[in-house]
Image 1 (tube, helix red, strand yellow):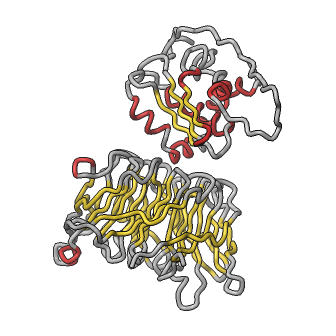
Image 2 (cartoon, chains in turn orange, blue):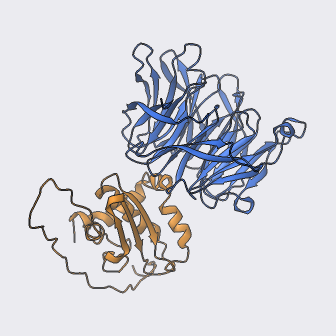
Image 3 (cartoon, chains in turn cyan, brown):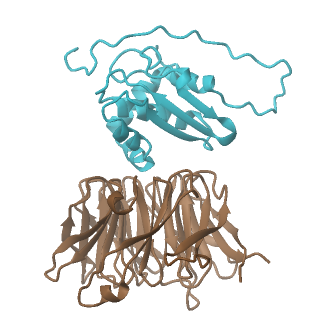
Length: 161
Length: 346
């Protein structure tokens, strides 16, 4: 069923090669290993697009460069780029990113999620909604939405793909 | 004389299994030898009632109100007599609970909102209740004999999600704040009709993002609002004019406190002694007081204390204890409630 899609023919990009994170020479098992850009990208890259069988990485909705991390201040900002300007899936994608980080990062982390400036028709409205934790909490009590989010997140846990 | 203050943590209360959204002190406790009591509500769909045990001074959970709300309980409020507790839930209902002996019984459920109810407030006499929610409406309920509640008015005017409702501490004037960045003031016209009499928005020095909460000073002639725009704003009115036949006087912007918070300010509460406390998404609690240093007419406020890492996660609610106590309760995404005592530094 192609007719109902918001972006029926998205451009699909090649997946980035997975870098193996190199272990430091003197391994101190008690040393605190800071969370970096790549680690966060690894949590997010395999999230499935809500309407295509491709990952957010393959559609260039997210990239490593779009992740800003300040581990010492426990802060992350994700900037994602919807495939089309009127993508009504933008809030679902944003919700998937937020849920994945809520489940993956230590609770001390503060996360801001936004649409790349200029990439969406209702950018400010989507950004406001994604960063209102009360609305996010309410959305995550909606079984239909949770099902959609879980389906998109499944590949990130290695359940499929 | 300038004093330095500190917030001393008395106890951390655990029990909720999800984030704690809000706390509310019972106004009829903490005085005349009645031990202080408060309620807390949570994403775990329950409400807990806590009371200080006089012999040990420790705070203990007296009751867990569950199996009524089917979704998050977002806020709660005690009636002025302290006998009834109202609970606003994402399940679209507002529960009314009565304190019977040591137990709490759900005596009424108010239905009408289309979806999430986010806040509930009793007026000064306990004869009216207000609720608001995601359906952009504000409801006024009349409290009838026999614990019956009747919808007196449905107020439309906000263009988005309404985050909080709060009655004026002495007059039957209602305030609501919203995701639409505005605060609206509602008054009755004498024919039982309620109208929006004023909107405080960006055009009249109001907030530029979601307004999360508001609180009044002890005399009711000033109000503080806090917002996602990282500021707090102080508003003032002419109380004499308000109490005259007009029944209403406009509120005007007195000052903006900016530069103190770097993440959303979720909660603000003004104590009877003039101390303003805030709880924010940066896990900190801050205290502000009116500063007499200002040479100009308009009031200025200064921060007298910042408690970093008051909680491990966002601070969602801060509330001063009843009466003249220096107790403060705070609730957080970390699932705990903390009881603090404000003390001068020796």
